[in-house]
Amino acid sequence: MKPSVFFYNLGQGFKGVARNSVMSTASILVLIACMILVGTFFVVIDTIDRNFNAIDDLNVIEVMMDKDYSESQIIEIGEKLSTICNDSPIIDWSSDQWTDDIVIPKHENFKYVSPDEHFELFKEKYQDQPWLDAFTDEHEGNHDEGTHAGITSSMQDNPLRGSFRITFINLSNFDEVVKVRNRIDSITVLDANGTEHDAIATEDIKDYAELYENVMSIKNALYIAGLWLMVIFLIISLFVIMNTIKLGVFARRNEITFMRLCGATKSFIRMPFIVEGVIIGTVSAAISFGIEFYLYEYLLKGIVQSATGTSGVAAITAGDFWSDYAILVGIGFLAIGLFAGIVSSSISLKKYLKA
Image 1 (cartoon, rainbow, N blue to C red):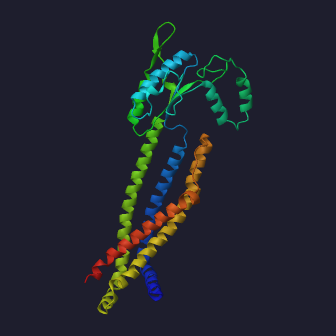
Image 2 (tube, one colour):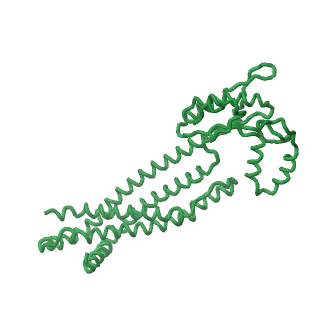
């Protein structure tokens, strides 16, 4: 395209926007609403994902052992848990992997964590806390060597308990997770008098399954709502821009007819109106990007920080707009704007460009 033709089309495009300023403004506002909805739903869903995935051991059920259980009782419970895991399609574990030469399982999907190991994990987690040294000095020195075999604690006063940790390879099958949890809750053992009783209290089965289901439901609902709202506002945007372009085409209908009679090509006639649609889409994208930045930095982040401050949940974080979202949001907004502008302009001109 020659520079003169390019600048002619660009000038005509700006003239068209100015000529129908009211409709152009309406088109820009509707497109902005569409983009802001899409952008906000995107960053909210991503923030949910970011924090949800940061939860430690999200796909783990931890079965806590009673402190009074002996090594043999813990192993007996472990064997029953092993069978449950072996029967579940969402746990990558076979009871054959617990062979005679293995005292207690340490597989990544089914393993026993002793009280001593929990103590070390506890120290690692709270290593920056000022009270940790006093806590460690109080408990770490009380040992009764040679009685634990990696199952019970070697420390007489260890306040922590051992546990079996079961890792799911797929949490999306919530019904199967519930089935596994119910089977674990029904495990029994015999006491010293030969009486059968529940081996594991319901509150000693720790998992995030219900949290996972609730968050996934919210996320899917937001995703579907955002998608439908985007479609609705995009259709509205197309109609508004189409009417804006049609006003310009109608105002220049005699000029367009004259150009056709003089042999002007369809592309030459069409281009100024497409440029007008592109201008509307680009301006909408630029304004939407600025608004989205403001909403994220000064509204969403503030809500997250407020929630963190009141609940003390330090894991709640929001990403950085420029490094995490700017490129995707910018490209997305520009794509929506260009699509709406070009498509609506092309449709509006069909009637006047028929042979």
